[in-house]
Length: 484
Image (cartoon, rainbow, N blue to C red; front, side, top):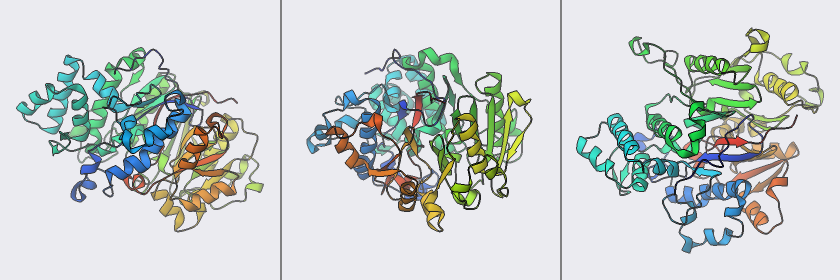
């Protein structure tokens, strides 16, 4: 089934506007073939159980997204699609019973759609085979493979779900990193690690060739590498242009945040700032340089926005504990001692590009809440692990700060982060398990659109071991504009 572009509207101007459309990829068979000896090369810290991660965890994520974004396709069907007889058909993109939502869009479906075109199929297969050093005979075999099956092979690396012909791309479930929407433009990432190169190639073909994105073809942004970088000694992050979606946040109407991290280089940050300013897509860009450690990876692993005046973040990279009752003025956060681990520099077209520095994350985020979202309430921070050692570090490692906002104040996180959930409750939020919430919605006891101040807790025994939260597992294409 080919999704058409008639109803697609790309527009992202915040992290918390009501979510209307996003790209995801459900865990595929390649994840079930990650072996311990290759796990770290493929950017996994551990191996996870595929059936468990699908049935007990990720399927619940898809159900939740459908109730919020595309309820017509799931209302009244919760028992049916959850039954053993259904055999997960609702969640399988290669199955006739697949939901095929145009709002909760499965990337594998888009890939199989474009592979129906013989010319595109030949070019993409040739590109993948060159990248993976395949034989010519295998290339011909793949070209002659049926599109739906070929899409599975290009993602999982497996022929007939058994024989690996090249490495899987298990990180494809982290759809945030392949690209990001900035207003009505799509920015394609430049991954830092070879294990993710095929992901970007596949999505580049999708964005430029799928009818869903036809109206936006001239709004796709690709960032070239630095000239002659391959002649420079070493392959350090500073020399190469690398950029991943977890380090980009379209945080408000005219402001983008850009992380410099283990995965996004200084050259990448500079390139995207120049491009966005030249295209007049934003007026303000803030660079946040964090330690280049696997613990942090991207800026969305250390903070995400919950409401216009509420943020969740890792306290060990920020300022000392504070009393919210005294933090009512704009000067409070900027008067604290500068962070020793995070550097923050902001460039503003309206201020003549003169750099402005922030002493810590709280000062920056407070400035955004007050001046860009016009919040009249004190800015509040909910800290990972309630800022209690060692729980702050333990829970940040399992993505306590990597939350996806379905709408302002309603966010999704992992149930294993107990101390962080308790910190949400201390700040007036309700916490609820996704299973309980789905039943309430299905029985008409809860209206998703009217929910407020809620942390939805997802089961996380397997998913969290893949080192990514729900912010990572989403690429929003459309959010409603936030009222100021």
